[in-house]
Image (cartoon, rainbow, N blue to C red):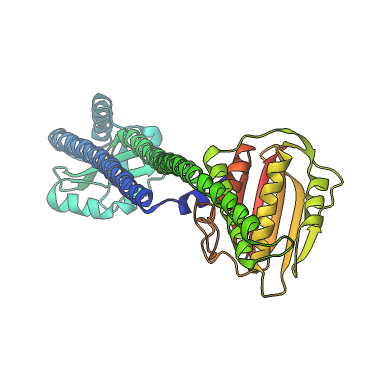
Length: 451
């Protein structure tokens, strides 16, 4: 049986108390996971806000440094340059701009006309060799600088390089106005982007780890409750076994006395060669009670196996041939010529006989068909036997998880120990037995035995 099916059956067969425990502990795990998730969410959100604030502070600091440098530079140019159109003064301005650029570790320093065309660059080789498209994008900042005295542009990215520009108007003695442009590297933002990427990766990894932790805790909780349920069930069965053994012994002794007394009375009052239905009733009821006592004792003592190599194909075939099917049609489907398993043949026959009797009783009053199948299967790299008994009866009515419980029965007679003892026998062989209701109706009892 696959693990998923076994887990489903185990959960379904939990008692109300175990289910309450499972729900309570599941809620506890859910609460822990929610708190953990909220902690991770707040931590990552706090880290993101911290990085964003740090980036904003660094950008503001850069803006202030650029604006201060631009103001000092414009004052210097206006004091030293009388006429922008004079070549000598232009050369001096170029040298001054280049010196300021180097001293302040700037990317560029140049003068432009208010319309955005370059007038003079601190580096003469770049004066006409590069296209500065971002000047058109910064037309608003240039207009603001001409109106207010100084303005900083937004962040620019060119060829993966980040930089910012500051604009400040400069006027000579003749009233000609140019705009000073100074550019500073903003590669610290690239470092911030790396931090952001690391933060995003951390969020993904933490969510994955949280998912693994949730899965593990839920699985561990379910397994713990199932183990606890099995232990409680084993303890309950042990008590039931002790009680059954005590009751069986207490019943068996009076039965022996009743039988011997009935025999004496029959010999004393019944003429030889005659029958009396009242004495027959006594014998029938004694035999029925003896069967019940044997069921109690078999359940309470557990299963002691006499293991040997047996071929299941002739064993099952012989049992089917001798089974009193009445009006029920028995169909035997097995394509194997031989299937040898180490088992206790008497116990296996007992289980199969019990399943056949249950199937026959389930199909009474209808065109009953009981199909028996035997195949060899591979599961998780191991071979096993799959023996099925299928009937076309009314089904289990949703009680497939309860039929193996001791003393559970849907019949008006019987102890409800037949399937419980059958499960004991199969599990003592290292196998499993399940009861399912296929979509087409009826009941399928499946036995798995290791080879």
